[in-house]
Length: 299
Image (cartoon, rainbow, N blue to C red; front, side, top):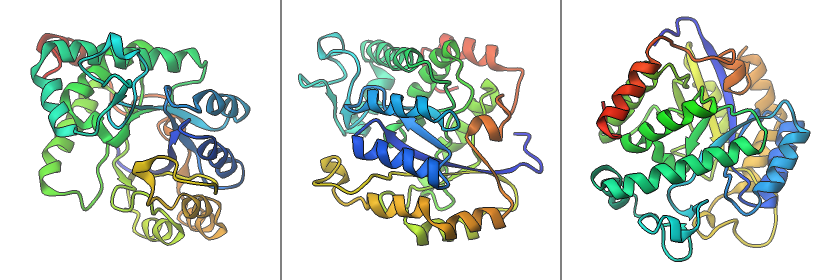
């Protein structure tokens, strides 16, 4: 990876489109705070509202938050019964589903159709595709990553989140290394590290200030969060303990803005940080052929 001297920060809100309260928080945090990017769930209940807001915010960089776990599929359940239940939702048994993605050709075929449908839905919004990541970081799975790379190239894919946090558990590091190698070979831009896994749902002002104080001397970091405005009930049952409003307040915090300015960090979406192009070049076609030949298996 050729990144000597590069230092930058991407501040992203995930789950854009999940709920009107999320969408309102994203717009507010971009207009009046430090938020630079958002990751859109194209099949989520409030996706149309999110797209309308994004069109009013041309400086907000929008990527796709691919949903393959704990959320609704885009295709009807009857078209992908190997992936979802009768309610059209993916489950949260990610280890089991990961084995099925890898070993069962019929499941992989359905997975490819769903991933393509989500890319197509994003393209239909007319928004520029800033980046791609996956709900619960499921794009770490080598089969999912293969499909994201092979299908995404048809839709202008240029950047993917690398979900590497400094204190990642040891068992995750080989998968991160594999993902890093494959993104490099594919000519896809990616961040060097993230902040947000350890404190998911609690990226408040203190967490952001601590992360900014610990920023390495080199490298591109992505801080991701889950802001939402106040309201009745949890956004989803799995997010009942998330402190969405605290995360929104952190993105609006003058202290956080001052810390970013004081660090002299280049800030923006992936397009700004990487100049609208991949960080490495020259091997994308070879990677595509390798992935196709191996049917989505790791390289």
